[in-house]
Structure formats: structure tokens, C-alpha cells
Image (cartoon, rainbow, N blue to C red; front, side, top):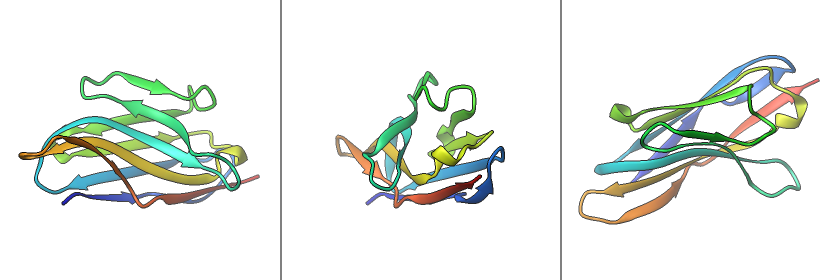
Length: 120
């Protein structure tokens, strides 16, 4: 069984910063892709940032230059550093991990979501 625990969301003023964390726990054999998605009220969930096992990253155009995704493979943890936050960044942020438990194939797992609210 896998558990993804997110932390770091909250309320911040425009121009401020937040750092999200997502830790995966369980009998994890290997972790491949790790990503952050977000879903604003009334909108579809969208990819914010992705990091693969080799360290390559990909970002949504709207966050390039402001957000940085990273990972600690030893801790099965991914981070999202968000700087210069804007009101349009307000959303529930979800952690996504593609990983393999010992003896099982790769599967997708999602965190419970953490609210980020940016006031103007």
C-alpha cells in the first residue's frame, strides 16, 4: 500500500512564496515520474510541473521561471518551490507519482491535494 502525504499549502499574498512537499511511503521499489497538478474552481486539472527519474523537468508555460520542481529519490519525495505567486495560481495542488512497489508493476498514485490561495 502506498501513501502520498502532501504539505506546504496555505494563504499567501501576491509576490510571495510557498514550498509544497509530497512524500511517498510504502514498500517502494522504484519511483519514475513525479509531478504536480493543480485544479482551480470550475476548471480542469492541469499539469504544473513534471520531473522524471533522471532529473529532466517540464513546466507549464504559466509557471516557467517562477516554479521549480525537485526530488529526493532517497526519501521518495518531490518538492515544488513556488515564487512570485499570482492570484491566478490559486488552486488545489495535487501530487502525482508513478512508482512500483516490490513485486508489482508501475502504477499511478495521487496525493490528497493541498490548497494554495494567493491574495491580491
